[in-house]
Length: 595
Image (cartoon, rainbow, N blue to C red):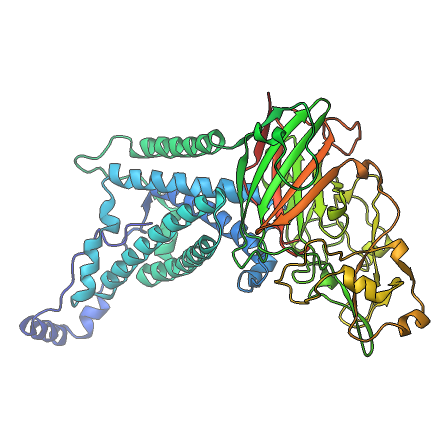
């Protein structure tokens, strides 16, 4: 923010007499006066050192915040404007940069305000200058007045960004996401307008003044060291904000118990009554009644060498329809909206994920990397949203409950984020999904998929089927009320998966027995869980707009792909409302504390 109008007086139109005298003088002198007009030898305009330093620090912080914020915005399901900037947006671990730049913006804003006050420079943005727009003044003064208005719009937008950013950071979503995004667009527009206004005011010289430092002019009553004092205030704000953040994070105190709870998806067991809950606001997920928000209640208790967790989260509907198959005149179809890019948000089961890390780095222990291709030497994710992996050799222990893939049968899938694995031939060719460092633990799960995708139609045409029900009428009965709307709850006790002993391998003869319009599950349950992947047991139940999940595991499994439960681990949780990857999220981890 530079001082545009300090040295300019208000230029009003001259009287008619003076105008006539001026014209007479010009006629008298004629071309001689024009020939003798002196060259403009005025020195180039400059800015004081403090303004230059604070201005460029603020510019760097705001631009970093905008670019990282737009990367996060481009990840939204229906984003379009921010995606236009895709080629210039950063990729990788974005969350830390966004947080750090936002803190710097806040600190520099305070420092800038202090500097202008201590240096008696508030006249630069005085609202009194706006009155020029109501008077017959010169173009320069009018431009200066417009620039003052732009400054105040910027201040309002930055304050709005800061306030809504804090709300998002502590877990509020909904309308505040929209307000935050709108304020960011205002700031982006201001940057362009700011450059244009300064150029119109004084040309290239006006733009270059922020590269030409000079000492700050002294005024009566001005502080002796305004820049030093302002910088000190900014540092205090920065340290204070970070300290407040870290000092107010939640801790989940793991209680001691004598008896493990019954894994039935209820919190009636006495052991849960002694476990103090932590409530985590998560947001920016898909669906969830249009809000994208779900508050998660978490409890934990240690019983001997085992630990039990209870998670209860908001989800209006009980969703089990994970890519069901429907028979039509031309064959079997797998119901989906974006299965081909691994970004399903319609025909999918409810899920829940919890991640444990030894570090509180943003992005789930530094394992979330945004962008179409965050790994330059590895394949991109099908959905171009990013990949999960760690860069320092660390491991994030991930537990994932999947309603129709064993979740209602007492299993929780044991997964992890780690160093990116090398892609296989199909992944390198873009024919198979590459998930970088996100992989299941060693061992085997008991679910597989009942469809075979066509490489040409990519799940948007007919598909092959692995197995058909022995008795399709009985299977239909087990599935309960079949309503293909994605916003209805499946019946209590309904089964949207098919066991191996309820099915037979596909054959045209068996297919001919099944009438058009029949719906069968897209998930097969066969075999058993084994290995490290089988470390987790769970029980779940949906009731009255909430899922409740209980999970039990050994404190230390001894497996290399698991983290031992100990004091100081950090935890993140995510709710999936019938979607594949667009889960809710929260920035601040919860710390585990053992008595």
